[in-house]
Image (cartoon, rainbow, N blue to C red):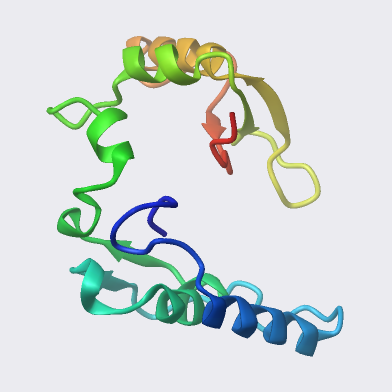
Length: 155
């Protein structure tokens, strides 16, 4: 979803919160029958005003259904303006300057533990160093394939 404060979706409204609380109360500790359904197609969402945050929450976020936002949908997002260069590559300098000391979760995609990849935590500056080296080594590394996963951008 759009970052908090984005004009597309200003955040969770009262209707969405009430719906979510009711939904999770109804589960009473059980997992939904389809924790991660396999879609037969992935919706492409062109415009931010095509539906509300509540609709997005109910249709995609809550049931864990993937979708793709168009570039028009995300053009006003701060992450698009600051985190990437005009050529579309990561802006490592900006990320290092603003988030370099933030500790991020990194999964090792080459290792399986109990049906998932083990995670370690490291400063973003160490991950970016790994990432640059990975690119320079023709997308390989003795450390394996590390993936910055589930970072929620908390400072």
